[in-house]
Image (cartoon, rainbow, N blue to C red; front, side, top):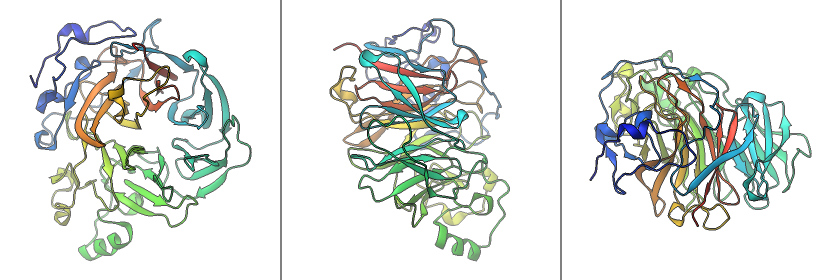
Length: 451
């Protein structure tokens, strides 16, 4: 059976610490049924969206449906699959976002609204963490990365307009020295302010993701064919210009910030940048464009290679032309890469983390190893909400299958209200999955309990 319909009782199930729908193990939602909304979300629901089944532009109206954040009800917890438990790991945060694991098991977290980087030190048995401010005074901090990977000497942190690093040794709870600027000028603020960081597996490259300054470069001036050719020779195939210079791209530089250049283009807003530790592939989780309808354009996670172009702003998901730029760049139509994993449109994917544990007190079953988790922050440009959950992305021998499965859900109360918005995902040293939630200003801990 390839399609199924969730019973109304599933959508109406109360918020509990553990939940698993009674569905066929091989059931997968495909085609139009894969889009759905929060009422069909539940741990275990699997979807597979493909570029050849997307709707036409403006098949529905474009809705501004911003969520109303409400206080979490007493005792309410996210829904997790059977055999798992969920608990509060840290509270009282100021916009908790990206997380990174230190070699001794400390968890670094960007509190973007508070302009600080904090350290959460887990307690034995999975209790609530102790939280210490590592450093503050940042400008919308987001990305965090340790370098080198083994025995790191530095912790790198991205502001919205720069990249800095602090000296680090395992166990540091506070910065032991002043910051050093690695990249002084990264295009900042604008339509998308998050700047994620990652290092190549061999340590030779620092990657920086920079989102676009607009929805679809509405005010970017036109260039002649000769002007475009000259521009792309320096900035890369499909690169934007004017206010979009060095935006909607992944940049690369040396770990010291030298030789900065465009690595990949046309990626509207990569807010989840990471490398797969099993094979070194660079991945982006990307927020696609708005205002084309409820189910357009699907967001995505994808492997990214040097020189690839993903279409923004002229195209999306291959040769699908954005009607707002009709006829402007026919020369690009054959150059647009199709992403690996498509999500329900407007889900807003953020941090992505590959799961690798096979041991540890809270480790997940072995079949999770090699798959990835992605936090979906949640929609605003959709009549019926989607996102507001954490999903499991399926890979086979390091290659994505295109399928993803709901893992942590239940943050939406109704068409109007939500009480949580997942942002960061991270595998803790004991195998638990940590999830930052900037709607509730809390960090959740998911552990496997059936051993």
